[in-house]
Each structure stands twice: as C-alpha cells, then as structure tokens.
Amino acid sequence: MNFDILNNKPIEFFNENGDLVGQIFISGSTGDLYLRASGSTGDIILGDQSTVGEVEIGLPSAESDLKLMGGGTISANGNILTIGNPDIGDQVRLHNVTFTQSLNITGSVNVTGSIEAQQFIGSGFSLTDMTVAGTIRTLFTSCSIKYSNGLVSQVTQSYDGGDQQITNIAYSNSLPSSVEVTGSDSINKKYTFTYNGSDITEIRVT
Image 1 (cartoon, rainbow, N blue to C red):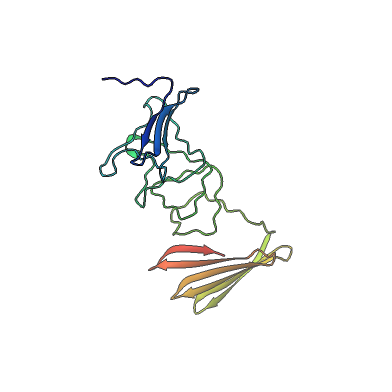
Image 2: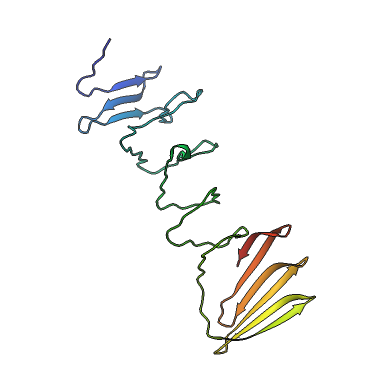
C-alpha cells in the first residue's frame, strides 16, 4: 500500500487534546526535509532510548555537515563522549577551540604555532627542542655561589653593564622545593616543585 502526499502537505501529529505537537514536511523551495516538534520540550529523539543503536547520516562517499544553527552543546548525558574512531583511521579537526577545563592527551601531539600556559605540570622528561622566550641580558662576567648545609642555596650572576640575576634555592628533605630568580632588570620568576617520592610531578611558575 502506497501513500502519496501532494502539494507539500505536512504530516501532522496531535495529542489526545487535539493540539498540534509535531510535523514532517518538505520545503517547496529547497526540497529540505523538516522534522518539527512543538510539544512542551520540542525535543526530537532519534532511536529507541531503551536499546543501543546507531544514527548514520549521508553516504560514505560524500561529506555531510551537521549544523547547530544557534550554537549549542554536544553532550554524552554524563557519560564518555568519543569523537572519531581510531580503529578505522578517523581524523578529527577542531578549529578555534577553547578549553575551559583540563585536557588529558593519550598519544603524541604535533603543534604548528605557539602554546601559552600559566604552568607546566609533569616531569618534562625527554622534552627536546624547546624554545623559551625571555629577555636577553648583556655579556656574563662573573658568578658567586652560596651554600647552606652543604647545598647550593644562592647563585648570583653578574653581567656587563651592571645587571645581576640572583637565584635562591629552597629545600625540603634535601630536595629543591622552589627556585626563585630575581633580576635587577625586574624580570622575576619563582618555580615551585611538587614531588612523588623523588620524582617531580608538577612545576608551578609564578
């Protein structure tokens, strides 16, 4: 049995009170298919919520776009949201992304451009080819070192032109707990270390 809908007439759905709660229709000008809910929430649910299923859009040979016209949220309803399937070689590209919470990455990261951060957490073991921006002081001329209880507690570096850089090192149980660098050119930084045993797990820069 076939049913033909002529002249772009919509398929309409009514509740038990006779109120219109939804429509399915084709746009006459563009041929687009519209699913329009007008109930109390206006939600459109694809699939049976009591069973596991998949929603497929488009063809494997053609790209499809999913547009949230006014913005919105993609949510896993409190579960884990996975974008992309590594088993079939998916590649995910994100543009103009802002992370408002922590980001945990499993695997390698290739970055084209710069990264700005308030702190570096982790040991940093095996990091190579790192470039750190900073000030360039004049020619180094001399250095003096102070010890406390057999440990280096202060290093004073002098430069041609009268500039100095003083590095104070504080210890806890013979391990450096903080390194504070003070320069006569007002370039000052403090590095505070957190340990797990004898391994550095966090470096905070203030």
